[in-house]
Each structure stands twice: as structure tokens, then as C-alpha cells.
Amino acid sequence: MELDRTDRGILIHLQNDARLMNKQLSAKVGLAPSSCHERVKRLWSRGVITGTTTILDAKSVGCALGAVIFANISKDGQINNDALLDQLISAPEIQNIYLVTGKYDMVISMVARDMDHMKAAVYEALTLNREIISFETSIVYDQRRDARLPIE
View (cartoon, rainbow, N blue to C red):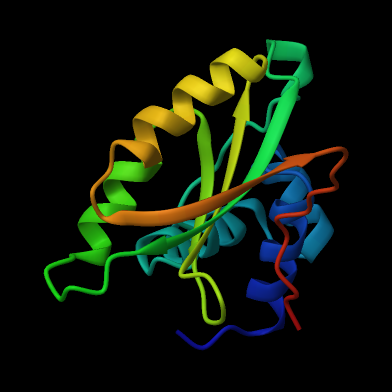
């Protein structure tokens, strides 16, 4: 889908605050509310906007421990990457999974309440998984996150 300047403006404002009401959004991009609403609907229907989410502070909900896991997967040719990713991401502790190039095949970010919770989650998701042949876990001391995309 070709995005014009107005579409890009809508996306930039929604990335910064998905709670903007249509009237507020339309004022920011200089459109009538009805036209802005139609543009947003079109962006949804064409898959440019795929969802909205509420981002929680992990510590506030009891998940004070974070980890990044570097994993290698089996190379026996029987693996279905999509099925593996879907299976892993279904664990509530796993937040992101990336298939990557280099020394490791996957990078996984996880959160847990404490070390016992992390140990149990890693054991269930990775150690018991026959398709994961090795992994290394690094504890996260601090993080910054920005899910916005550079829209030009």
C-alpha cells in the first residue's frame, strides 16, 4: 500500500498515543473527522495497522526479572520454524522471539517474577523442547523499549 503524507501523519500520531480520539487525531493531521476515520479504517483493512496493545510495567505486575536467551535449534530438517515460534510465544513469560543470523538461531526475551519462576519457565519452554539443542541465558539489568517504527 502506498502511504501518502496524511497516512504517515496518522501513523506517527497513533504510534505516539494509540488512545487519541478520532477528533483529536483529525485535528493533528488537518482532516475532517469523517475523512480521518475512513483513513484509519483503510489502514486497518489493508494490514498497515495490525493491532493495539497496552504496555504494562513488568515490575508493577510482579515480573521483576528479565532475561535474554540465545538459542540454537535442531538442524535435522524436520523443524517447522513457524510451529516452533508459535509454540514458544504461547508461553506467557516469553515476550519476543527473533530468528537471527550468526552464532545463534534465535534470541528470546522473557520476564518472570523471580529466579524460581524463570527457572521453571525456561525449563518448560526450552529445556524440554527437543527442537532447542542449546541455549544461553543472560539476565537483564535494565532496559529501554520503543516499539515505534521510523515512518518517513
